Image (tube, rainbow, N blue to C red; front, side, top):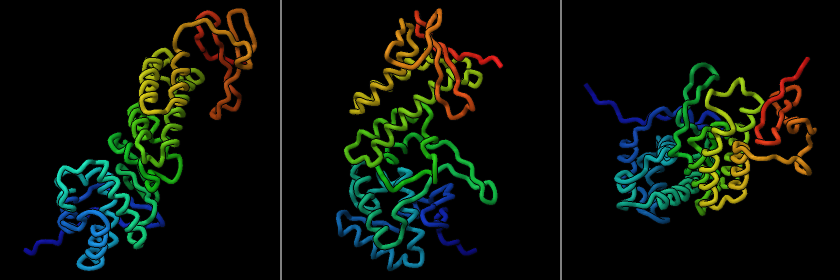
Length: 296
């Protein structure tokens, strides 16, 4: 029985910038096809393009997209990178920088799109319907580094609101060449704010262990990472959110628009998820924030 030709389990873009679905990657096949094709520097890119337009011309678009996706997934490391380039024990940051140059060259040669829509956990579940699994935290820093990589057409930041992504976002944003630095730090602040807001204005949906007091240690830890990575404004915001979970005397004068009551203050919290802005009460002695139930 004849052996089948090796293939790459990857779909070519169906529109201007999509590379989905891509459930698995035969990286060994890719490395075998491109062995020695990236010896480093401009000569490496010339060698790669010559290989793609020569022996691999029939599959050049497929191989070029597969190479970029393998890079985004972090598969071009160690012995695999050595097989492609001949460089042993390459620093991962050097690999990323070299692959940025490769992507520029492949885009210039019209073998890949200048930007790529790719989520490693996407699955097609029906006509025009997809499901998205957990985005690996180990890939967050690489996503922050490049302006070329998008997870979905819109609201991709919602993928990264979970606590496990916060520190990778902050540390990825600290890299000198991080293209999405401001965006990543904004996601951290947005995620922290939404979590704090949710336990106050929608406590019925919060878990039994979710409260501002329970969030405080987490926000303090993230604020420390933010300061360590130069995100001072983000750190100050996280510290302020953390302080809301700590008992303290609260004075509303000249700070917020609220109405004083016998035991503290009440005020409205603008929230897009409610037809009427929720009202909260802030305790004067402890600073505790609680939702005020409206009477019909």
